[in-house]
Amino acid sequence: MRVKEFERAQAELERLAAAGNAEAQYSLACFHLTGLARSTDLAQARAWLEKAAGQGHAAAAYSLAALLTATDRAAAERWLARARELGSPAAQQALGRKALPLEFLPDVDLADAQSRRDALWLAAEQGNMGSLQALAEPRSVNLRDEFGRGALARAALAGQAEATALLVQRGANVSAPDQFGITPLMLAAQSENPAV
Image 1 (cartoon, one colour):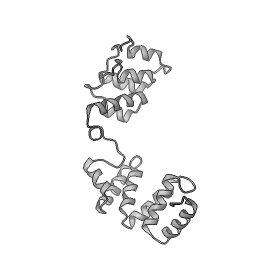
Image 2 (tube, one colour; image 1 turned 90 degrees about the horizontal axis):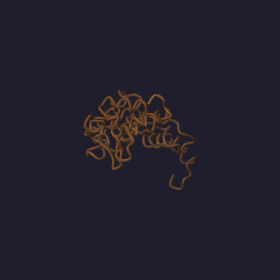
Image 3 (cartoon, helix red, strand yellow; image 1 turned 135 degrees about the vertical axis):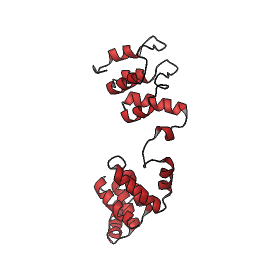
């Protein structure tokens, strides 16, 4: 692998993995996850991770939890528990956060007010409803930048109808002008999305 002969390395990993070598199974799963194999193949990656984790490979168990966090929460929790049992430091850290791998928890992951505000603005602009639900609090929805624009202006300008509706519901002021006298309501009227 160090000389970037990935096909040769994959062939050797396949031989070792088929013989039951847990480290090779884990490495082969990583090949499939990252696309170093002939292509990215999540099903193959999961299969090899399950084999390695079944043999007590802590990193494989943790990787399975990460892989399944978005699609199968119950399975992700089981694999995270197994990774903890096997002594995975990353699994211990996840336990301390009270979260699954790769799970975003605004209260934990964004400790300072400026980070929470910036994350709110980004979520509003991108229409990231999961993050917006967690971050849009009555005390933060009307925070504004040095130009006078806040989360609602960003959502309206980006044409994010669902985000705009949530922010208004949470108390964002539709009539608050920025330093140029432009309000979120005006931005919504100019949006290409008629739902805004």
